Amino acid sequence: MSANSDLHARRNAALTKGMSTMLPVYIEKGQNAEVWDADGRRYVDFAGGIAVLNTGHLHPHVKAAVVKQLDAGFTHTCVMITPYRVAVELAEKLNALAPGPTPKKTMLVTTGAEAVENAVKIARAHTGRSAVIAFGGSFHGRTYMAMALTGKVSPYKVGFGPFPGDVYHVPFPVTYHGVTSEDSLAALDQLFKYDVEPSRVAAIIIEPVLGEGGFYAAPVEFMKALRALCDKHGIVLIVDEIQTGFARTGKMFAIEHYGVEPDLMTMAKSLAGGFPLAAVVGKQQIMDAPITGGLGGTYAGSAVSCAAALAVIEVMEKEKLPARANQVGDILMQRLRKFQGEFTCVGEVRGLGAMVAMELVRNRDAHAPDADLAKALVQRAAANGLVLLSCGLYANVIRLLVPLTAPDAIINEGLDIIEKSLREVLAATAPVAATG
Image (cartoon, rainbow, N blue to C red; front, side, top):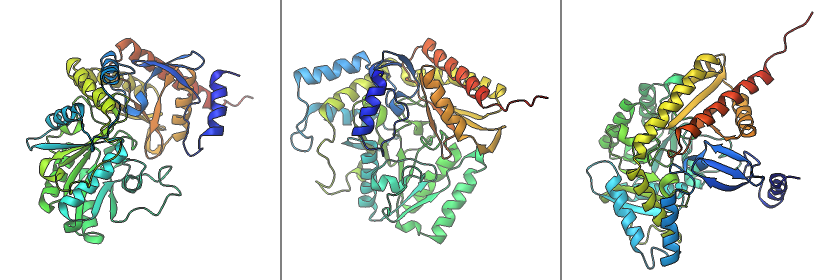
């Protein structure tokens, strides 16, 4: 029995089946955009821990900052009890990075879902209202309010209801599937007429680019109209940058592509380069709405994670990773467009910076998603040495989240594996010609 097989058997006996395992590959080592499993096999990593490793596995500067914190500092005191320098310095840095002229403040937490939960709390405290609007296809986390906001039932909501009330969904504008900005705005107008008056809405939460929902970017005109709508009705605009943030889209934050200032932003994933850390950053007046003691958490703003995050931001600035994201995106898009021209199963190729995806369909039909092909491609790619992720409301989108620090040679190696794997899967599923 291989080490991977042994560990997988032990995993199935020890961990709940509710936690899925996409690949029975047990990682022992990671370096930049490569990982090695328990059997010593090397893989190119196009998943990045689901957008957590924009600076790659074990970036030397991030590693050194963590070691320094461990050797010369401490691991935990609780930032609400006896706070510490690295938390203050990180909050100052995030406040300065957040787009828009309005003075900002920060709340540090541990996970993206926790950031979303607290953003809703802050919005409700500020407005004195209860209702929250989210979008179909969105993903905001797995805790109860975050699940309620998430616009995808399976697998995230199945068997877990009832969910918190006063949460509503409208369609996200996806041109490829025939939903325009006007359609989404009309749905909001109908929602205000049919279900909830705008004066009762505390917040609208949106991902500038749907993450789990399929890497669809909101049109600029829609985001500007949403900002105007929120201003008109006194609604807090929460921009979820958990997957899009920290250089992935070619800007430090995706919302910078839109010229819109959010009221609140949620951040996590690549913020701390693999260490658990998240944040809510927003306009000072809104952030200060909850009463003292109303926000917090035992592990909120871990000192080790804060040290890592400060180093991550330094790497992004020094190595110009937002600009590098655009270079990576160009490499990915050029190759995927080649696939699109050759394979009728590639329906659309899209991307913002290095947040790139291809949608797999049957015979170029946008209304015929091919989830089976996407699943088979992910498994075949792993067999060929590439960690790859799917996503989308119909699980038919292949998303590429290669670390921004990956050299061109590694990126092209991963793309070669995708092409090889796609050819193999298509050959294996092609109908057998009749013989006489």
